[in-house]
Length: 406
Ligand SMILES: *Cc1c(COP(=O)(O)O)cnc(C)c1O
Picture 1 (tube, rainbow, N blue to C red):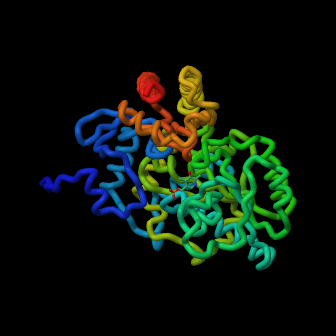
Picture 2 (picture 1 turned 180 degrees about the vertical axis):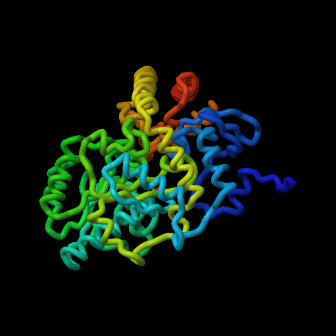
Picture 3 (picture 1 turned 30 degrees about the vertical axis):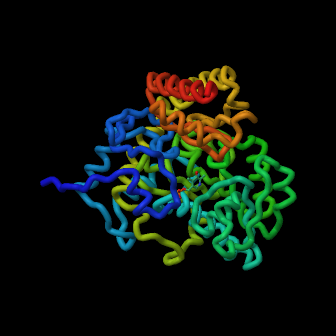
């Protein structure tokens, strides 16, 4: 039996939705691999990946199978009961990382909320109520709850909502001296993205992360890595910390973890996990069987030498061509990033116009992202076909050519 739906259009958005987003003029209705079709049947190449989420593109057969198998089996039982997909996924995440314990939730913000609450609870339990300060980076992004915007280093997201969470300070990213000057006995956690994503696709320097690790150890503070965007193969390693060889105490994951199905996770050690005893924290949907079944299939599929090696070679493919386009049209000062998280920093003449470039790309049937007003960001599927990369970048070049000739 099929249900008849009333037709809807982009114009309806402005009538029925809270106006906190400004979506594109077209509505995607179907996706397959790195291709997406809109309501009119127009085909687009997707280098935006649902904001670094769709690590296996659209409708990947392994994920469709995991989701539909689970959908026919068990959807939700809450954390009053545990479930098999959650336990399997937790075991696999533990096998693949430094972690010994996992907390599941539904988004990156929730994973960070759990991480920050854990850091404060550990400090409270072990050192008393004065050790609660959190040090984070300018331009960082950690989500949109009040705690996570307070820790995030972008006032445009945290101002205007009344008092922020107290005890948080921000230091310039990749500046070890600034971090050294800020950390003290009152610091409970240093929170960093190994690659700043929303802040402009800025990878950390190795010495910075190593220095942060040493400072945390010296001051009994926890090192928290927000890998919501950099994790799940995006950097070419399963998690970016593994590329750097600097291990955090707490790690947050989301975005790519579900490959398009909402899930978040906080990973930590036995020693720290015990501070979140029964009743201290929770979420109804966290560890939902559908989400965990999909995430298990994502992890199984991407955590292989072939897929991760592919991320490195595809990075080079993108970078070479983007640098060429940047030079030819004078649009970029730099093409940076790791793996398949790539940022093109706009030249002075194009500063502030990332959105204009996005719209020009969409007009050429290509979906790309921005990371702030001055950076065009690419976060495609980790298994994007080389032919799709070539075709997508040809469309991108056409968009840039049209803009620069206008
Ligand atoms: C996207 C993002 C978040 C927030 O994740 P949501 O799922 O939107 O809550 C947190 N941290 C980083 C680094 C992100 O890129």
